[in-house]
Amino acid sequence: MTDLSTFLARAERLLDRIESALPAAPQVPDWKSAIAFRWRKSGGRGWLQPVAKPHPIRLADLHDIDDQKERIVANTRQFVAGQPANNVLLTGTRGCGKSSLIKALLNDYAKKGLRLIEVDKGDLVDLPDIVELLDGRPERFMIFCDDLSFEASDASYKALKVVLDGSVAAPPDNVLIYATSNRRHLMPEYFSENLEAHSVGEEIHPGEAVEEKVSLSERFGLWISFYPFTQEEYLDIVAHWLQHFGIAAAEVASAERDALNWALQRGSRSGRVAWQFAKDWAGSKAGKKRK
Image 1: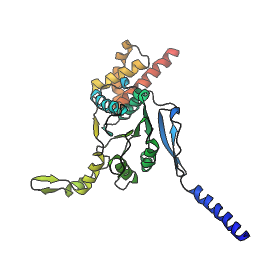
Image 2: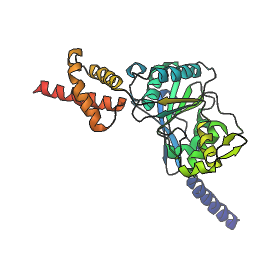
Image 3: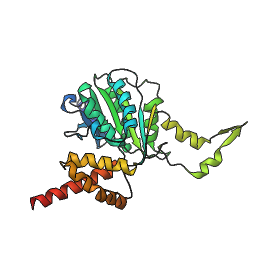
Image 4: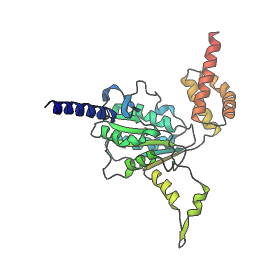
């Protein structure tokens, strides 16, 4: 009897050690504590971390991307109303408002139940676990994946394909994926892949490598493209942010030459560059006034 008790005690200790080494089930967060969350991992365990101070940008702050804004707002409005809506892929020029547009959607629609879950590319393999946490909740969740770019061998690439449209289980109605990328097809494209193309009659069919790359982006129902700003559009955005920082309209015009030189030095006329210039110019003016 003593031997049996010793054996059972050792077995229980062994089971405790095995259980401690296994990844724990994700903890359910306090959904009322925040409108935005980040997926975090440590020691093989993942959890949703509330974001205490989400970026305050609003849709009204985003200028000269009216067409892109209109399309994604319409999709999001359908989503929060419980109507059919699409996963969204935003692609194109860096710094022209792709990520800012998603953050602004959260702020404008949070009162209607919209929530944001930010997931890093390396953690996309956990998407099935994340989606399971969200299934059945009354809120409407955007899973936000920023600046996506994959190699064909990435496990996260395959996980994203499955969650978008590749599993035997239907995705929850309260979850959409909103992703940004500088690449339309999310993966590098090589000249040699064009050599795989073949003809069937008079039609040209791409090779398997190209088909594989296109198959991921095609799983997003809505594609929204962004383009470089013209000089006029860039200055319009500069003016908006200067006024946001309290610069009088009369002073805004005097900042145009400096704004153009700033963009020339950065090699880009984008919303991000306009925002950075406005912060620098407004900050320097405030410093001079204090002196």
